[in-house]
Structure formats: C-alpha cells, structure tokens
Image (cartoon, rainbow, N blue to C red; front, side, top):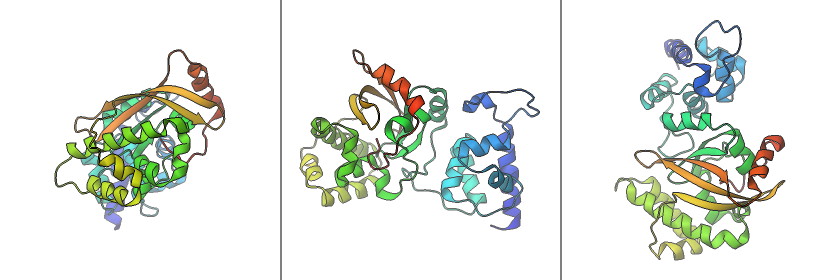
Length: 286
C-alpha cells in the first residue's frame, strides 16, 4: 500500500463510520455522544480489533490490514458489496472467493442477526460455511471464525472429520448425513453451471468419504429449510431446538436461528447459554 491509498483508506473508514447509528448495529446510544455515528472504539469492538490498531488505520498508518480484518470491517460498518470491493482495493488485497469464510454478508441478514440478541443465530453460505455468528450461537455451537479452506464448510468436516459429529447424538447421524447430501445437491444445482466451488467440494468429498459417495449416488435433492435438531452441549447436555432458515435472493446465504422445541426444557437451557458463555467446540461446528 502506498501513502495515498493508506490516506484514502483512513478517510473511507471515517466516512462509513460516521453514517452508522449505534442502534443500527445493536449498540446502546449511551450518554454524551458528540457525533451521530459510531466511535472508533465501537468499530474496533465490532470488528474484533484493538482500538489502537483501528486508530492507526483511520490515521492512514499501521500495517496493511489482512483479508480477514477487511471482511470484519466490512461487516462492522455494514458496507454494501461495492463498498466492500472498494475497501479491498484501497488495502491492495484481492477479493475473497465467493462462498469462503471472508465472503461479504448480505447487509439485510446482518441487520437481522444484530437484532437477534437472545436467540442463537448465524449466517452461513449454501455450502455450510459459517460467515458470522451472534454470541448465543457461539455459546451453543462454538466459535467458527478461525476455520479456513475446505474445513470452513461443516458439510466437509462432517464427512471427513469424525469429531465433527459430536455435535449431534449418534442416533441422528444417518439422518443428518442424508440431509446434508440432499441439501448440497440442491445448492449445487442452483449455482451457475460454470461454478467451480461446489463442483470442487463435491469432488473432494467423493474421493474422501465412501459414505458421501454412496449417498450422492442416490440423487436425493432437498434444501434444508427447517429442522428439529438435538444438539450435544458439553455443559448443558442435550438441547432440542428448531432450526429455521431465511434464504438470500440468490440462495448463496442463509440466516439460521434456533428456537426451543415445544414440549422440552430447551427454553431454560438456551437461557443458560448467556450465563455459561462460549464453548470450545472448534471441531464440531454447526
């Protein structure tokens, strides 16, 4: 990055920060606010960065931001896809591949996610890559932000990493496998015929998992629009939930949210998530 790009990056961040109200991103307005937009420390908090680091970016100084940090800033500042692309251009970083963990999150879905403060919710891609989670979802399912490459997809982990299946009771594994394969076939069919991401993932799974290959040969096709799931939580035990899906217009992203199943004690267990905080289940995922 040259000095002109650094200066423009800082100015762009300041301009985007100034237009957002705290309520837009789920923050309290608070007393004695001198500016209508977000404060620098609030953007840093939302992006998972230190305040000093973010201050350096706005001043046109500091190290070149990583692709992961740019993705976090784009989400924190509710950038449109064009604004996100411009941010990457200023930082002299290539745009992330569609469907990866750094993909741009649909702003409407991000807004809804922000408003779901007490309900576990997250945005995933059609290939089951988790893009962003709220705090209750992290507490229920584990933090997925550090997963990269093929491992970022829970479907890929489900068929290649035995530990990933610990999220669900063993009695539910066969049904989950069938549902994942049918959903993946539907997602691949909805994509452009020239798309290579889904085709590459399917080819990888066909070579790595005999179970996946056998199920794929059955040609079942069905999107997962809603499910009743039983989730193994390391501290709370078995939690039975309804998993609901809201699809983006192009079908590439889904907002998932989890509600307690009627007739169970899951409502009380979900309330306890806020007390227990997050769990370390980087293996299982979603």
